[in-house]
Amino acid sequence: MNKAIKIIIIALIAIVVIGAIYLLLSKKSEVAIEQGETTTTTTSASTAIDCKADSNCLSTNFLSCNPLDFKMEFVQPGSQYIITIIGKEGDKCHYLTQVINPDGSIFMGYECKVPLTEISLDTVKHFFGQDTGSAKDTQAQLEKDYCVALH
Image (cartoon, rainbow, N blue to C red; front, side, top):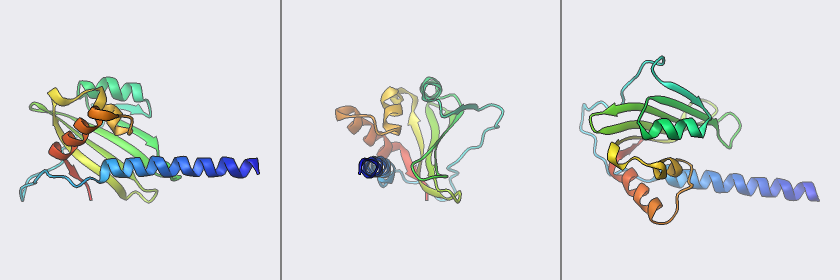
């Protein structure tokens, strides 16, 4: 019986995490993309920092908008949560957040170009659903204003 309770608790935690990330990433974007506009930029793999699943590496480099790759396992076996910082584009930081299914397809994600002056530790907390109160509202508005949903 004790084992069954542990399984139920783990399942509930997984559902809450998936729900939080889904809500975080599923908000419809209000950013309009003009026809013919390129929405992604590629960088050489040799210039991007490989943070693996190190959130300290992500935080430190994201605040400077240094190109990086962050990958961690997601709730479903074989799925991944990926944050890719493309880098600075003028006065904006260009980055992608994605949840990738085990088959490699995109479950949900955003491409963002946020003014460097708006980037903060609250933004990093927002990636993981750890922001609260007015900081959460501010980050949700930034996401609406500067991000486009990936389909």
